[in-house]
Length: 248
View (tube, rainbow, N blue to C red):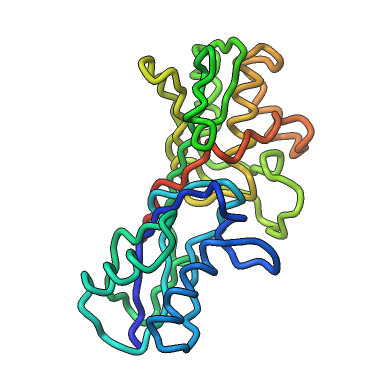
């Protein structure tokens, strides 16, 4: 059967993550329900580039699926986009090689995390930014984030529950932007892969450095320790966005 690759975006607020679960609404389940209807009651399995957790948003999640017809790509995209729920958008659909795999062929992913530092907080941002009401030394955070770049064992930045044994990952780029008018900090991480809640733990660690509860040079010893308890807390899910997934 023809294999299709699609780029989707979603508001993660009302989802219990991407992957199908026994209980709870998920992005994968909603996509498969739509394809089930389009395919006249026959199931179509959707495979994503990776999981996103409950409340996490996506601007550029990639999925693939096999569908028993070669269709006009724009008409197919439009059909999927209009028949999925309003918190999912199908941005692009294309035919892929038979051996394309949305998860196993990923070369890079880019995530962003949005932190609302406004005082008082903006209630309209509560589902799309994580609110932090305390003072932060952005200069210290800018120094420390550079220590995350490179190839490291990120065991200390991985939440319990992960079954992945090899926790070595490479971060190609990591930066923080201060959007003064929006009263936000935007953290961007681009790397070859990310562990369970890794981005949120990195952000939580940088926040802890910014408020003086960890020293500016804390990250290298945390890497060496491989001890999750030495890193910062896990930042809230509503601030996290999967921005882009890249392939060769």
